[in-house]
Image (cartoon, rainbow, N blue to C red; front, side, top):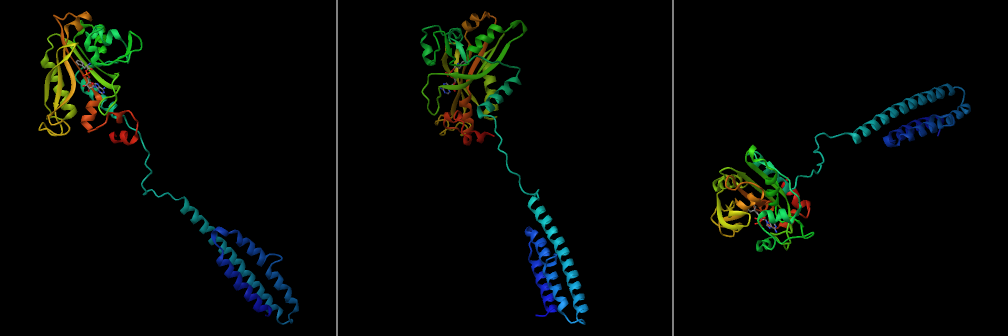
Length: 347
Ligand code: FA5
C-alpha cells in the first residue's frame, strides 16, 4: 500500500475507533490520541516514509498528512466533547429524583386501644366537670377491702381472688380503694365530689378469652347532697350512648357489692342486633358492661362524711370489656401481647 493509501486508511480506522468509544470508557480516547497523533504515534511513523517519496510527490503527500492530522485532531476534540456531555447526562439520569413517585411509607406507632378507650371516657367525664384521679396499684388491704365495707374474713372477699404481698399489702383487686382515698381528701364545703379513676387492677383469676389476671377498670364516684339513683342512671345512659351509639338503652339489674346499697349490674342494649338477640349478646339483647350502685352509708361514714346529709353513686367498668364489645375483639389476651398485627388495627 502506498503512503497516501496508508494515510487514508489511518484516518478512516481512527475515526471508526473514535466512534466506538463509550462514555464510560472516556480514557480510551486519550490512549488512542497518543497512539495516533502522539510523538511516537502512527502518523509520525508514516511521516518517516515521506523522505523515500519522489520529490514531486512530497509536497502533495505532506499536505495530505497535515490534512489528516487536522481532521483527526478535530475529530478527537469533538468526540471528547460528545463523551463529556454523555457522561454528564448519564450522571444526571442516575441522580435524578422523580418527584411523582409515591414516597416510602414510614411506619408510625399508635396509642394502644385501651389507652384510646380510657382517654375517650376521661374526655367525656372531664366535660361533665369530673376530676381524673390516680390511685395506687400496690394498695393496703385497709383501702382495698376494709374501707370498701369488706372487713377481714368477710365472705365477699372471695369474689376477688387476691395477690397478697404481705398480710396488709396487696395488688389492688379493683379501682374502688380510690373512692376511700378521694373521700378522705375532699372538702365538701367547696361542693360535691365528682371523680373518675382509671387504672390497672389484679386478680388471681385464671387467664382465658375473657379473663386476665391483670386488667383495667375505671372507677366513678359522685358524692353530694341529694344525689339519687336517677343521677346514676342518667350518667350511665349518657356514657353508654357516647361509647356505643345514640340509640343505646340501658337496663339496671339488682346485684350485690358490699360497698353499694342498692347495687346494680348495668347492661346496655346490644349494639349489634339492637336488642333482638344475636351471638354478641348471647341471644339476650343485652350486654353487661359494669357494676354500680348507691354508695353504702358505711363507706361514707368511714370517710367522716355524714351519710344523713350526703349521698352518692359509684360505678366500676372494665375497659377491656368495653373495647372488646365495641371492636368485636374475641380474646382479651390480644391486648397484652404487643403483636403489631393486633395493635395496628386501632390506628
Ligand atoms: C368490681 O370490681 C367493683 N369494684 C365495681 C364497682 C365499683 C361496683 C363501684 C359498684 C360500685 P366486678 O368484680 O364486677 O366489680 O368487676 C368490674 C368489671 O371488671 C367487670 O364488669 C368486668 O368488666 C371487669 N373484670 C372483672 N374481672 C375481670 C377479669 N378477670 N378480666 C377482665 N376483666 C374483668
